[in-house]
Image (cartoon, rainbow over all chains, first blue to last red; front, side, top):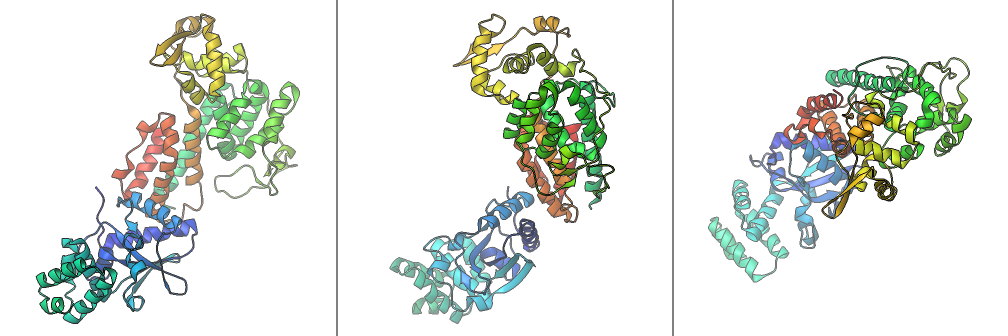
Length: 201
Length: 337
C-alpha cells in the first residue's frame, strides 16, 4: 500500500529529493506543480494525494517549458525517494502534460507564471505551485473531461466566482472543441449550481 | 557523524578484519588462531577482499603477501581474473602491486601477467589507511612495486613465518585438491561435486567461476572414468561423486565442509565497507543516510542473494525513512555473525 502525501510528507519528500539531486550534483530543476499536491501545499485544500503532477518546468530565465520528458536524473532520484518513503513509484510525474493533448501542449492559462508560489528546497530543486485561479481552470477542465468526483469536490472547495468559472469554461473549451465536451461542461456547471455560466458558454 | 553509524563503522571494520584474519590463519598465515570454520575457503575471493581491507591493517596485508610467497603457486590466476570480470572489487591496483612483488621465481609469469593487466596511474596515494584516515609519513624508501601502481608505502619486509597450508584442515579442501590435481578445471569440478549432492555443468561453471564450455566438456570426459556419475534430470545431465570414497582418499571425515559462493558476498561486503567508510556519508542527515544505504542495499542485494545469504536481510519496505538505518546496520552485522 503506497503512503499518501500530506502537506508535511510532501515537504519531506521534496526535501529528500533535493538532497538526492545535490548528492548527484545535477543541474538545477524548477518544477511547476498542479493538482492535489499544489492544492495541499498552498493550503487551498486539506486532503491527501498519492502523487505530484508536473504541468510544466521553468527554464533558468523563468520561461515555462515543456516537462515531457522529465530529466532522467530526476526520475532516478524520485524513484529512490519513492522507495525511501513508501510512495507510489511514479509519485512525481508529468501526467498532465505528457502528450500532444496535455495541458502544457494545448496551452496554459494566460498569466499562470505570475501566479506561481515558489518553494526552494535546495540549490538544485525549486517547486512552483500553481495559484487558485489556475486550479479552477484545470479542475473544471478535468472534472468535465474525466467526470471524477475528486475534481468536482476540489472545484467546489475552491469556491469559484461566476466570472472565474466563465473564464475557466471558455479556456477549457479551447482544449476540447467538440460539441460533446460543451454539453458535458454545461451539464456539470448546471449540476454545480452555476446555471448562468452554463447558459453563456 | 551519526553515533550509531560511527559505532557500526568501527564494529564492521573489526568484524571484517577478524574474519579475514581467521580465514588466512586457517590457510597457514602466522597470526591469530581461532575457531575452525565449517566452510571451504575460497583463496581467490579472500585475496581480492584483503586487497581492499588489508589497507586498513598493514600486518594482515603483509602476512597475506608472506603467505603468497610460500603458497602462491596454488592461487588460480585465471579464476581470479574471471571473478574480477563477474564481480565488482575495488582492490585491483593493490592486487597488481602485490602481483608485481610476487613476479619472481618459477611462478613469475602468472603474477607478471596479472600485474600488467592494470595501468600505472599518474598520482600516488598512501597505501595504508590509518583509522583516522589521515596520511602517515612513510619511513624508509617507498616500495617500488607499489609506487608503480600509485601507492606509497614503506619497504616490504616479509617475515617468512607463513606455513604451508594444512591439507586436512576442513576449510582448506580447495587447496588440498589443487595440490593433488593441479590448478585446473577438474580440481574445481571435484571440489564442487564433493560439496553438493549432484550438479549441472552450468551451475558449477557459474559458482566456481569457470567457462561453462570447459566445465561441460571436462565433465563428459570425467564421467567416462567411471568415478564421476551422471544422471538425467529432465533434459539436463547432472553429475555426482561418492564423497565417502573421496574422504578416505583425502584423509578427511566423511562429511565435507560447506560450499559457500564467496565472491559475490565478499564483493557486497566490500561495497558496504566502501560506502560506510566514505567521508561523504558522515555529514548527511539520518534520512539521507538511510536513503543512501537503502540504495546501496538494492545494488548489493542481488550479489548477497547469489551467495545465498539473503535470509539475513530484512524487507526494507517495512522500514521507511530513517527507520531503515538501524535495520541496515543490524542486517550487515548478521551477514558476518
